[in-house]
Amino acid sequence: LMELYIMNRRVKQRLDDIGVSVHATWVGNYCTSLEMAGASLTLEHLDGELEALLDHPCDCAMFRAG
Image 1 (spheres, rainbow, N blue to C red):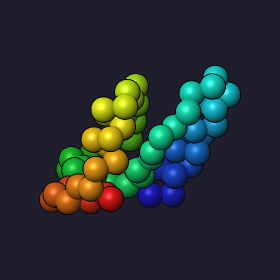
Image 2 (cartoon, rainbow, N blue to C red; image 1 turned 90 degrees about the vertical axis):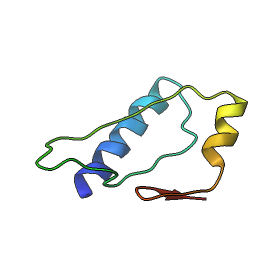
Image 3 (cartoon, rainbow, N blue to C red; image 1 turned 45 degrees about the horizontal axis):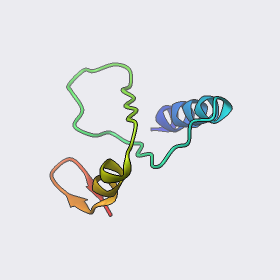
């Protein structure tokens, strides 16, 4: 988990350097695969509708937010 936070911090620094704002980040082991090595990073361009959906409370088997 520590490595994921380090990666998250570095990606945030690079996005800040090029003027990309970050609305939200989640760091953790979400729906992992057995014997999977590495990490996954997802970026999405948000409009108003997607931002509202992203901020909506969620409670499912692999993820909880809001």
